[in-house]
Structures are given as structure tokens and as C-alpha cells.
Length: 193
Image (cartoon, rainbow, N blue to C red):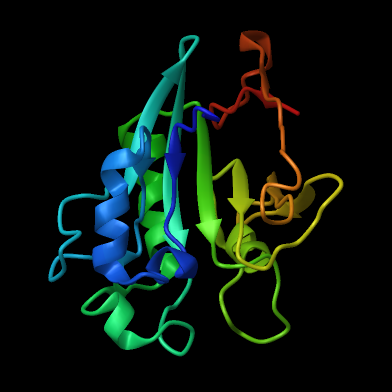
């Protein structure tokens, strides 16, 4: 009913097991995007994609998804042979493909890593610092309520946005990007926030 374009997969999607997730997927009218879960030896093989490109009013928007490590968080019998792949490596692969090959004007990461951890565990803020082409990270998992996006300097010292609006549909987030052809810089970025 909210007309989502896409979702990524997180730990609670396995609450009824991978077979339960499979049973619910036909009811979704949106794409399941997951770059760092390898489902090749599971019933979900071929039912997700690592990224998707959308065209909105002539703007190419590339979206990729990342999920949290399931081991220790979800019972193995629920996620079965799902393999967790390094989210940082996959993020760099996906954003490079979306920017350089797909020629996207805007690159968005749907993340279910969590906003911030004090440990070395991967999170959205650490991810943002490692990226080069990602413009926005829309996060989940830690149920962090942000009044406005956090601005993070990425690997090439360009500011990107990290946002999370809590949990349970309590809030709806909105971020507007404005494109102005006269503002294109040497890297091809024409985004003003």
C-alpha cells in the first residue's frame, strides 16, 4: 500500500525461516535487493538481485542492498545455506557498477547493517566512510530515530547522507535531491541537498 520500489533483507525476514520468506515474496509488488547474501544454495536462488536501476523523471537511480551477518543473530536452521558476504567489498563493487557502468545519477544503499556500533562490526557510518559513489544510505536494524540525516565524509572526502527513521513504521523518512545541470562538477556529480 505504500508503493515501495525496493527492499533489502534483514534478520527478521528469516523469523519464519527462509521458506516462510519465500512464501511471502509473491505478495510483494517491489524488488528484493540484496548484494551480500548469497542465496545460490537456497530456495531463494534467483529471487533477489544485488542492485536495481530505476528511472525517475529522467534521473537514473541505482539502488543496492546490504544485510547484517546472520550467524549468532538468527538460528542457522532458519536461514539455512544463506552465505553472508563482506558488505564493504560488495558496496564498493555495487556502487562502482552503478556509477561507472550503469551511469546512475544517484546511488542509494538500502542497509540492514545498523546505524553505529562501538565495535568493529560493520555499520552504516563505517560503510559511508569507505564508499566513493554512494550518495545516500537508508538504514535499518538498530531502530535509530534520527531527526535529520547524518552527513559523513566518504573515501574521496565527498559528503554523503546516512539516515534511519526508527522502527515499526512509526516515522516515514523523506529526503529530496535536487539536480541542476549547471552545477555538474568534474566528477559528474550534480547533486545539491
